[in-house]
Image (tube, rainbow, N blue to C red):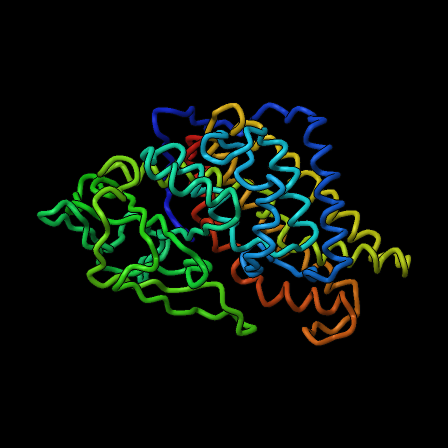
Length: 401
């Protein structure tokens, strides 16, 4: 997980969009059809008791069996070429699937990063061997990834990373360093890790960085848990000590790591998970308001619903832009900033108008959802870029700083 970086670049194969004005997303009958299929599937799974609805499950809900079920139905790798196990469907169809899974609080964390950005990264920069060996496994829901960007003591300054990869005489890489906030590294197979492959250049801090595709089962890798407030474990520190990575596991071009990392952030920042992490809480609140008819609660529900609908339209426009081959980095940063602020506001608004004591053990579903949301809240505005950094990206993109 990445919590910094103030510059936006792209590779030559896609068009970067700095404008905040994006074309509306077209209505898709195919997307609505797959949405209905997902709802039917989720209703059956909930009725069978295979999962319970929770808040923030795209990071904390690891369930490999559930991920494999999605793969069997063609709901992973949806937009990828069929030759790599994909299904060549549109970004709008994929959006419908992810939106329904998030709204239901389904356990999607195992495959989430691999499907959202690691797979597209491999499609854009990977070798044919890397694509053939890994992408079909992701699409089947059998291969999971972590993001190796942030580091201890680096804060939001991604360009200051110290993890190094040195070439051996045989052409392999030896990696030393550490990454933090690596969500679900303990349950993942690979990491796409940003490393320094040549000495830092004071005149160009972004030079000399590369991405390696690292098998997390290699000797010399230690995964240390970083527990959140409720004791839950999805964050980690991953330490690399003389880890030998095969030479053919370089991703893309040596020295182009900064460009590659910032290009993938449009995928990381713009999805519906950036404002739907607390949707199960909002939905439970809506059910409570129907029962009470309380005026203050109705006003709060209307205010939150209006914001959620506006964010959804913004996020949909970015999905449509990605479908057109654009990389809307600046709008994506804005959606992430506004979206994660909204997620926290959902908690505060509900606490203000409902007399409920948050408790993970409460028989009241609203009290349980509120407790989960509060315990996860500190991470909302950190993951994917702190809000302060994101606002700097937007300001730079608009020429304001």
